[in-house]
Image (cartoon, rainbow, N blue to C red; front, side, top):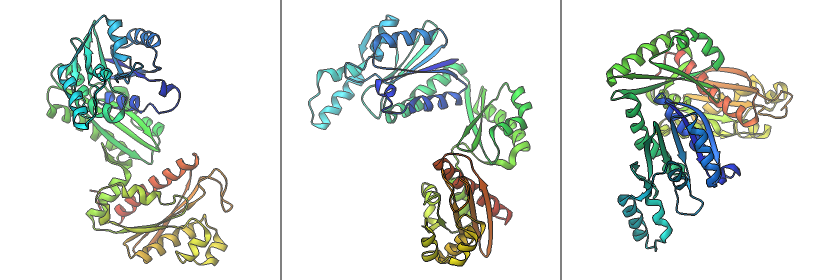
Length: 417
């Protein structure tokens, strides 16, 4: 099954909002083995939308619409599709009751145009909206499947994940199951990873393997089709073990894991505490840690010491050290890590300093980063040469620090969970 996603809304074309829905839907479809070959964005214009539908029908057997299901005149997705398919719109009584109940509970008068949201394509499966008013719908006609979803991501994402996606999986698996499992890698580029496992990618059939790259990481999504979950997991596990036998040293987690979550998992499991002193990352390292529930059992605190004076006055780094070696140096990073560990009384101290860019800093070119990590009395440093935009460099520095810390802890005998 090949899909096209059509996003409807002039605000998308005007750049007022980003089309995050297409990204979300594509990722969800890839998990069940559906290929997405085209994304289209159409303004609130019935004629142009009709033309986009005709083009999509010439190259896709699954067409997914986002947006244009609301109560106003410029919400015209289902009206245009109904006219194109010559399928009447009818009221869905459950949706209408939900809308009426919403306004009653809010103590507001429901205007007549709000009833429009309860109209659905006759013969379609109605997808209930548990986070808004307009229902979605799924219709099969003339060998194609059409899915209509509301535009707001808070409504679209749960509707697709819990209503549309299971129906699609059942449709294409013909009673079987489709399962996906993601392997996450750091420290290896996408091109190098693909080269290492090219023979596996060339031979793939079932399971299928899809490489994905994002923010310095590489992921492999393994998708298997089988008659049962047990058989699907068996196929996935066999493929997984072969892949890990080749590039396992770069694998840090699976599925929804992140480098931050695996770091916190490891710290909590081994009852280790951590503090950080940050310069170029300005608290980003600690912020990423703080997103993980339960991190208070490991993260004690930290400091943002952005200037030379802050490093001297707050961290107690000797002025002579900075005058001799500079702010962007191994010596500075090591001193930051050692001093913050001592100040906060933690097992681990992290120091991050560098030149985020776009200009050189303290005589060092943009993208130069020094990481210092103090574990007990041992202090090590690592130099990075990054080549991205300013904030990309900051994020990559943080991710590399997580990866580096995990590796150092493993070398000291602390096993990954």
